[in-house]
Length: 225
Image (tube, rainbow, N blue to C red; front, side, top):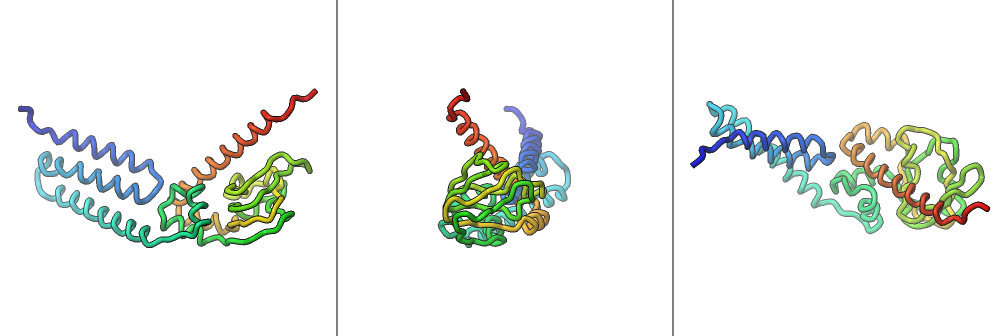
């Protein structure tokens, strides 16, 4: 019968640590550390001499299990309204419930009227907008070049770096909006880098969706004569 080789558990622990270093959500990092410590425990018990290493790994395991439990309890206490839950599902799904709750609370919900301008071409976006209900048009050099419907993020392409918008966004119907001022969002994300990473992924996905929609509109246009 082959003898037990704890080295493979050590390799497994290192692979889990590598995976944990690539994830965005803090709770997933904690789970990865706990699993890595659990895999490293046989190595400490059977592969190393002395009990100091074993006690250290047990401490790492217990600390991360405790933090996971605290995160789970804090997330379990969080609740969302229907429109907040839709915002989270569409754009903040990579955030834990508590992190999403804190981010949403940095902004405000408003009702806006048709004709209001949200973003002006060649100016920095003043806010990041989420349009829960309503429609809007995108204008460039005075011509309509795109349309937005309920569920869209507005301003995500430039709000984080303060670059000038390439188009004007005007509401074409009454709308229900969530918004957060650009300066406030940048300050919040600077203080919460884990949230920033998840938000960047959500912004990239929203931009890909807009690009796909624009390509579809172009494909449906009649050919120039």
